[in-house]
Structure formats: C-alpha cells, structure tokens
Image (cartoon, rainbow, N blue to C red; front, side):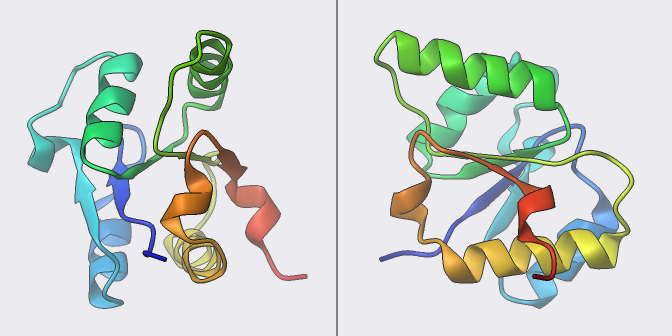
Length: 121
C-alpha cells in the first residue's frame, strides 16, 4: 500500500501549507510545478490520475459534480480531497496528515474525502 501523493490545485496552493507538508515528508506538488495553471478541473483530474496523485481543492461544488459525472460515465480519478476555506494552515496540515496516515492511495481511487471529516474525534 502506498501513501497518498498530493496535488494542490490553484485554490489550495498555499506556500505555507506546501512547505509544512514537505517538511513532514509528504509527497506534494502544485499545479504550477506540474505546468497545469489555468487548466480546466477535468484536465486537472486527468493529470492527477495519469500521475497517481490525489487532488486537494477548495472548489467543492465543481469537483464534487465532476466526480459524480466521471463515475456516471464509467471513468476514473485518483481521488479528491475537498475543504472549505478558512482553516488555519496548521489545522489544514493536521487534518491532511491524519487522512494520509489512515487511508492508502489505493483506497482513494474514485473517492471524495472532505477535510472536515478528519478533525479531532
């Protein structure tokens, strides 16, 4: 089983979050690093699938709708993590690390996880 490899979309690509995740040995890249700035959400998900990365975004409505459409068409994605804006970088990081520790990348395929579900229990 392999660890989730993150792909931060344009909405979620905070330099502080990126640096904090990297400092904790999370395999993470941004859309800018991938050369995917200003691409459509579907293009982002296709790139993430081709590169076996789970996309992390604040764009809840559009990515959830795209997830549903892809499943209806019998298509795949590598996984989506959705969050609402407003978390501190520390809280965002803690929740992402908890999710990454609990769920292998293989279990993310065609799944959507909401960051709000990964707080303290």
